[in-house]
Amino acid sequence: MNDAVQSDVQRFLDRLSEHRAGRGAEPTWIAARRQAGAARFEALGFPHRRVEAWKYTDVRAIARGDFALATEAEFSPATAARLTLPMEAHRLTFVDGVFAPALSRLDDLPAGAQLVPLSAALAENHEAVGGPLGRLTGVEFSSFAALNTAFMEEGAVLRLAPGTVVEKPIILQFLSRAGEQAVMSHPRILIEAGGRSEATVIEHHVGEEQAANFTNLVEEIILDRGAILTHYKLQEAPLADLHVASIHIEQARDSRYTSFNLNLGGGLVRNDLVAELNGQGAEANFNGLFYGQGRQHVDNHTLVNHNAPRTFSNENYKGILDDRAHGVFNGKVIVKRDSQQIEGFQSNANLLLSDRAEIDTKPELEIYADDVKCSHGSTTGQLDEEAVFALRTRGIDEQTARGLLTLAFAGEVLEQVDLDAIAERVELAVAGKLPERFNLAGLVETAAALNEE
Image: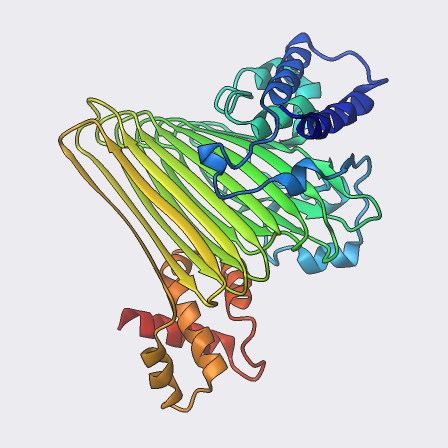
């Protein structure tokens, strides 16, 4: 590790020492894990492009950043109201990683559901949290996971007792604030869903337009037998924000996990999504849509491990890139030995709206069993100029025609989104350059019809 790289690492470790100085004693296991995270991060340093998993993603903007740690959760109520998804939901809100009780709503959770900030869960019963926390995403997973563990302090804990059904969505909202000093946050999310429980969780990252902060998130999701979880990750961070997320799911028999990974914002974004299908009948569905413009960089790495027979996975990721945006998709499905009678399907399609936009894509299958149904594929192209011309002959101007076809491309993922508030955010981002006079609802209907043709 050269002197410049060592200096970058040391700056983050110094922030950790400053932050922990003067704080009271903490449980031994927390201190040990924090130290293990710091040691592993120091040994690894930030990943560089000679590391295969980071070949197309340059993280120097993070490594060289001078980020403080926020200590308060002040946020303009009017701005928060404008950014918040307009829907009835249970809500846990953080501002630059600090819990914001005034912007949260936890008073009407059903019996059998517990949603609390990580700090409160640790204070109430740290031993109950200590077992599952870090079991799926340990310090060995990546240098960013190690860094998160070193700073592990706040986040969200959601527990569902067996048989609990939460009717309203649960929103974990992360607000990024514009300030004189850029800040970093390292939220940790733990979700434990008991047998045959069911919930929808919306993870929403958004902020003030001029914010330029760094979020480094680790999320661990444990689904017991028959549990059903629908997980929306709506990433609308400001264009100067930096966002890294590691999400790890463990699924028991007959559980079902459905992910909607929707990336619209952030200057530099990296998502790692890993599912462990450990019981027969377990099912994982990965739906992804990333939309980049300007010089945005969005990197999605996914991995599905079929560790048991008769497990199922289906993955559909779509990328739309304009201007000089750069997208990365690396999806891998691994079928372990003796994991017979599994089904694993993967598709990645990309639309380049500019000659300067770029995509690097690598779908992968590793199969060590013989009784399987698996497929994977990737396509990259531009808008069909004949289709643009056909729409123009119907009296639609060129800008609207291109927006219509772009939205039609995204429709295969969007039609699976059941929540109007989320679908509308994505539709407006993808088709936002259309003339205001055009009825967006009508556009979506027309796009869907065109897509079916």
